[in-house]
Length: 200
Image (tube, rainbow, N blue to C red; front, side, top):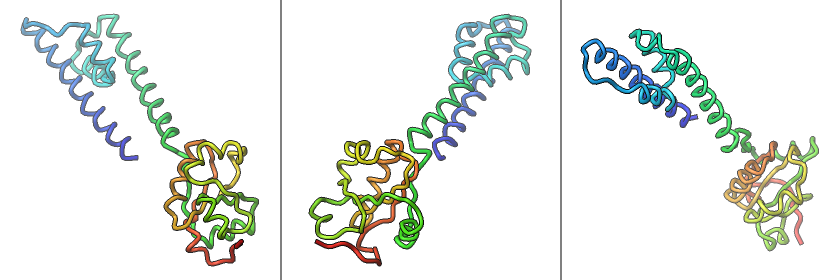
């Protein structure tokens, strides 16, 4: 994902900066110049700079004999890594790591004929009554979040979603994924459906 690559780049740059700061503080210590406080050095490690701090300690041989750094920086690095893992997996789940799939009407027809599926019409009631695909149930796309949990209790069931032109079906399919449905397929609009429909 793009945001993951961006975050990794930012973290990489930040850790290089922290590494350099540890080197600068080591140089200051050799020259007897005013130092960066130990509290701030540890704070840099805590703020996702643990890797840079650890490398800075051992490359520049800085603070390696101080217990708070020898133990604290590796511990902070472990916490940094845990935060990254939670962020990546947590945001993937929130953003729909299980996303709906776009399929063609022909593929949808094959699934209807060969598998146990639910066909979901997300148009208005008037549109549904005018014509709909046989066996389809109606949940207008604006009501998916409220009605789907009641009408579609099995979140692992295969759901084939359609509307009139494919715009509302995409919105509804995404809403289903956010609700936790794991087998959602969007096959677009009924205007592209080459098979028979039910008319009232």
